[in-house]
Length: 399
Image (cartoon, rainbow, N blue to C red; front, side):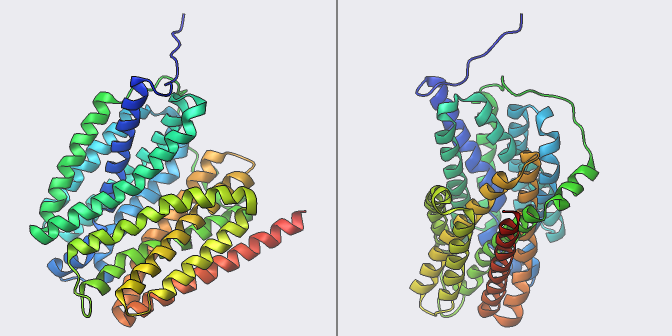
């Protein structure tokens, strides 16, 4: 007789232990993916690179994650959640340490690419684990803790590495944080309860089906492209605002630059707030208002006072997370087929936008200064409005 296992109940010892381990794992995964972002100017100086070339250290990881997202939905059902998430964190931690020791920029890019490929498994499978292993009544709150840890992990990784770069070197920062992530990965392996409720099956990989899904519904494709523009703008702004603030007239320290990413915390509030508003206002209005806030925020950063730069980032960040929440949930509502595939396609173009525009912004910075980056982001937001208008028109015709 097949043994049945109860789901994890709220307020039990197993519940709190699992929550804690998931929180740490999420911090490590997103910290490893983004910890090099505040180091772009430092890496550029050491390897004598342009801003666009140095930003590839971030873009390579995001591009690897984007490529991997194409396959996660297809092979995910056949993967053991605990084993793969543990291996993902272990390999990513080791790569972080090796990058800190690496003296060749092209090898750093290769390592970052494969780090992104490996890390893509963590968010997909951890969300699946939460949905499968916890009681239905607690899934929402556990997912909220997980998403909050994403923001905190990304912030902590950037802050620790930036501070280490000021007091020691960027290499020391990556090695230390890599060792911390290694300890977290081992904790996940030891303390995360085994998966008992995922129905592992055989892998049925059909590339043609994936490509067909991208173009099967024009409305969904346009929403994917909204995600492309929004995430690309967001990464580009945070990639290159550091260049502006490290030089005249600001001359801020690398530690302060790391603290600048505290503005990310506004994203946790924005996601929850705008997520609720999608039910009251509809996804289209939420995306429109959020894109307008992104536009307003980026324009404010043109002003010279440091306070205006920070205020602009706060408004821009609030708008981005609202736009992402509205677009991501809209994909789920409009898709009538395989929701796992459509979600993965959205994330594929989301991270592709981060990689592409996150590098292109460096070209505009190099040739036109910060105002060039602002102009690129404004153009991306205008494209978002045009895409949104087209989707709304198509939905009206269907009615």
